[in-house]
Image 1: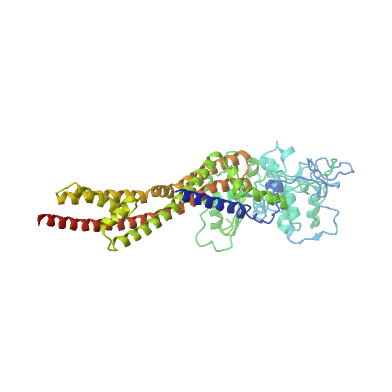
Image 2: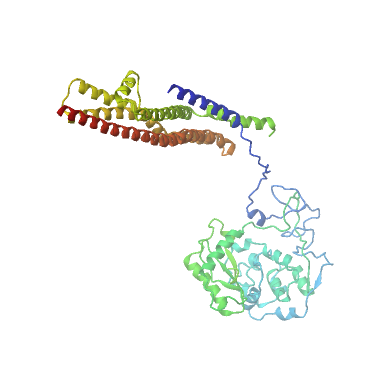
Length: 345
Length: 237
């Protein structure tokens, strides 16, 4: 036994010694250095909620357009600029003016019935809703400039609001019961910026809703101006921002998608129309609890009555089931415009 | 990371460093496994040598036994020295035979039984001697992996506790602890594998030697039985 133990101990000693030498330092694994770069997760609101400011200016806590020297001549001007008249378009940009068709305008403007002009206007396929409230209430009586039956009817309905809110209710008084919509002052500017030369059919709407001399002047001259220019003065230091301000209360893309998904689940597509190129836009207002505040309206018809009605039914059906909307941001979904498209939805 | 850093890192991962960095439980397990391995190999070497010796002794004894030498003579030479294997069986049987005849026993059947018992006893004692400590090999072969695994589990547990303490999941933090824990399993396997193989080999060798001795015992019993019959016939005549 002694020999066995000795031999065994010697063998183990030798093995350990060999292990200490041969297995002492395993070669370090060569791993290429990967440079880590930081990734910021930016909420989409920071892009969609741009404040008015100067694109070249440095970042400040509060965005502001470039300071101006000329004194304020328009008290309620909304668009930054140095004009004497608060325009959404730059009247100085003579070079970019374009002549628009002249023949169509006078025919579409004098719409006889008080209710229909608003609807006709609504049915145009516009990408952004144009709330009627962005115009500042002006002291001039409306009848003097555009003596249309629409305004008269509106005035007759609520004479007490004439002084302040008269222009708001002018285009479609009974179909728009949404005061919060008044805050979204963004849309008309966007419409002008994105579609500088609209079809003449849109002209009467502009004259209906925006009551100022400049737009009337544009209408009369059948001229559409390029974007830029306004009467608002800024005395603050220029800071980074967009050319237009936003209220910041818009549905984010993901929230919009969630809403679309709900409507899509409610939507029963009319049989045999899925392959046709049909799409319709539906506008509906919601109250604070997320229920329909009024009947949904077809904003832009697909031309197919059955298809349009299926979209309306989808909204009703979703309202029955209860639309799920972010409850803390009522402003964002007080009024919703959804395009029903068999491919998109 | 320059060369000295790499060298330092490599040094930390050598077997010696791994051993010293381990916790005391893991250290204890590793030391125990090392001792078990040493003891296993001692047994293996010892047994291999003993079996080789026993086989040679058996060969030599069978040679002399069947060489035609008289059993009395053989007994006289063998009884004087320490015998193993077949020799001790032969000696114990012959001793019983001699005692019975010298004291004048008369019953041949009882004599045969006594001789068989004496040879059985000698055979059992020889087998016990051959198979001594083989059980240790068997138990090490079956339990060493578990002991090593125990060390690994404890090592990894402490390693994870260290990770939780350092609040870092970097592989550089995790790896040394796991490596040192795995060293325990490696040692357990290192001890167990030779033990299992050697146990199987040695026990089959022992069984072979045992059957050879058993065969000899049966044969010798037959020879003695014939002798008893002859003696009884002589007496009767």
